[in-house]
Length: 280
Image (cartoon, rainbow, N blue to C red; front, side):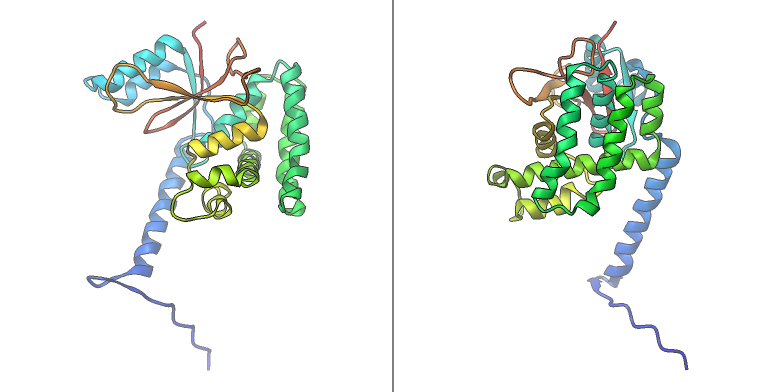
């Protein structure tokens, strides 16, 4: 006689709705949406003229049309990144490394910081075996940048799922590491009665978790890099919101543009843009 399959625990959400079935349906729907997005959107797009943004909103949507015009006065091109919850990390990783393709002291400094970052994480209690592959992939990509390849080669690497995701994972670990090292400071910004460690385990380290100010600040500080975010919303005024600048220090700032000033991301409520390029 075959052993009976253990009954799955069932919970009643009320009104005859089974919680377990309801949750599974939501998860399945989310998976389908992610699969559709993955099939239609590359991890990182080619360089696009910023005017493509006009097509994303109705012509009579004056709020967004005016704000796109404001962005267009300051930037000429964009790259998009897949809206999978890893947008910020993938955008930052690509945009920064693209800016370092010409080499120089910024690349040397970044390589040194990245090289020793694994040791810092291990000292904090992260398992070497767990993080080693991610760190190796991260350093391998920096080694590729040192050879000054064509932009298309770097873009191809970031569109390779495994490589791209490993970079995202390592940037998440660096963010988590910094938050926990400076937990006394960041604890004041954590809601819900969670500790900084709990926040990192739930909102930083898992893939596909969206990023907010606290994540951006932590990564900026962890890698000693400045980040600037352009933001569009339905707020009043015909300009995109004042750029949010996350500075690594007041002495030296990094750029994805020709003047090596700051790396810039334009973010709207509907999609993420990897980087914006000043008009030529």
